[in-house]
View 1: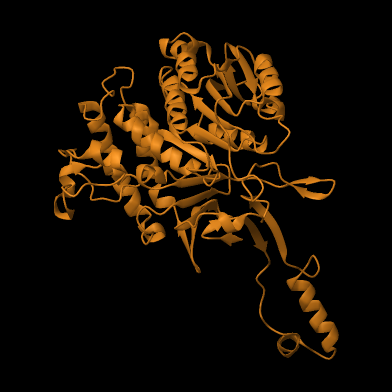
View 2: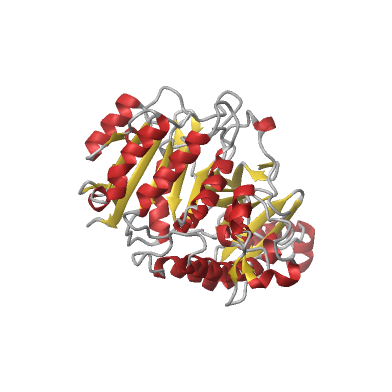
Length: 458
C-alpha cells in the first residue's frame, strides 16, 4: 500500500503454483471409466493437504492510520529491503506506477568497504576537526569512491531517481541494510582528488556553486554534496510487526497525522551516558551548552531507575542515550549508562514515553565502542520505536566517547535555531545537522541514520 511514492504497509501474498489444467483436461489425461473419481484422485495427488487457498499476511507497518495523508510530502521513490525464501537479499523500488525488483547480493562488498572505512579510521589520533584537513579530505575521498561504486551497483534500482528528491527506505526484515546515505552521484574522484574549493560555500548554500568543476573535471575534486546523505532527505523505516490485541490488530508506532503533525522537541531534554563518556570533558560541558542554547538545564540520569523516573515525571521530548553496548549471558543486547546495564527484554515503554498523548519523543541512540554486529544494534532502534519514540537517530559505526556529546550538541544547536511554528520537517533538520557538522569538522556525522517519519514538523 503506497501514497505519494511512500510505503504505508507491506504484505506477503502466498499461494501455490499448480498446473493450470482444468478438471476436464485432467480427465482427458488421466481419466478412466469414472471421471469424477479420477479427477478427485488427481486433485488429491496435486493437493495432498486439501484445497490450497491464498494467504495474505501483513509483513510490516510503516503507517497504521490513513488520516492526514493529504498533507504529506511526495517522495521520489520508495525502496523495500527484504530477502527471498532462499535468503537472497533483494530490494523492491516503487516509483509512480512502476516497480523494480533487484538482487543486492552483488553489492555486499561495497557495503562492507564503507563500514570498514569508518571503523578503521584513526579517529583517536585526531586530525578530523577541519573540513579541509588532510585526514577529513582523505576520508571523504575514499567514501566518495566507495559510494560511487555502491551507486553504480544499484543504478538499475535507483538510477532514474530525480536529483535531490527524498527517498524512503523500508527494512522489512531485521537484517536488511543498504547504506544509501553514501551513494555518490557525481563522478568518482581520482585517488589524488582534492576537496572542492567551493565545498564550504556549497554546504552553507545547500547547492553547488557556479564555479564548481563541470562534468569533465568532477573527478579532480571531492564534493561534500555528492553524497545522498547531504543532498536529499532519506527516511528510514525499520520493520514493525503488528501485534494482536483485544480489538484485532494494534500498532504502537508514533506517526504524524492531521491531528498531531508536529513535535516540540526543546527544551525538555534528558541525558544519560556510559561511565567512560561521563569522564570526558565534552560531556561535562554538554549540560551547560544545552542550557545556554535552550534556556533550560537538561536532566541527567545516572542510573536506569533515575532515567525511568525522569521519563515519568517530566515527559522529556529529547532523549539522548550515549551508551556502550554489549551482550549479556542470555545473549541479549545491553545498553550501559553509568556502569549499569539494561538488557533489551527489560526495555519498557516507561523508559521512553509516558505522556498523555501519543506523539512520543525524539531519541538519540549513540553507541560508543560498540562490539555488536549492526543487525543487533539496530534491533534497539526497533525496540525504541515500538515503545512510541517518534524518531530514533542511531549510529551505523562506532563512535569515540567524545563524539557522542558533540553530536548531541549539534542536534540541539540546530533545533534551537529554528523559528517557532511549523517551519521545518525533521528530514530537513537531519540534512542541516549533517552539513553543519561537516563545516565544523565533525565528519563522523555521516554515520548517523534517522528512523521514523521525515514529515514530522519541528
